[in-house]
Image (cartoon, rainbow, N blue to C red):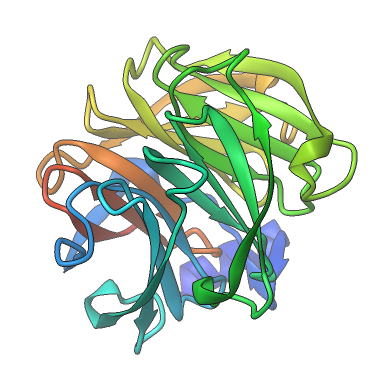
Length: 279
């Protein structure tokens, strides 16, 4: 990590857990690392993407296998070092899964898709081990979105965000009991239609002040500012974006390293995870 970035992090002072500090990515000047990893052997229609906070594991939602695929990374955050471990089928709850999210301690997993139009909640008896997952309950988002593609949670589990193809918007929900989707209630939404008409993935910074959306119509990651943290009604597009079309023409998953220095994109065009530098 550069000295300049260390100085930026010290000034930002926004911890993301484990002593890591988030610094807003320089998305406009992001660059492809020429590092990638194919998941084609496990799934031909990959969707959502999620990393363990220490970068030692990555999870890919499989749209063709209806399962969550787990991989180990021998070198943290370097996807070229990934190797397949195991999977967990979600077919009993969702036959067209697209998005996956984990609680920061790895003891809960959430899956969304367009057959159930719901957020499905699972407990993991062994943290980060998908083979130990068991279904708990779900929460329907069909009143707001009939084609949900991705789900994201605030780090304390009190807010949930769902993006989808029908409304072309990010739907925000409050959870009266953290991480318990049965306690979710719809709050509001934010349209991204002016930038992306086929939104497939959403990521919000640990500060709650930056939101990133990508989709299949423009093959681009768009950046939004939130003037009030975690409140999508205060979001505005800041005219910063980054095209991934040179690597992937149908992006479906998006994730950032906890310090903001790396970005990862996966998609249907190549069935591959691509790694970018954003500092």
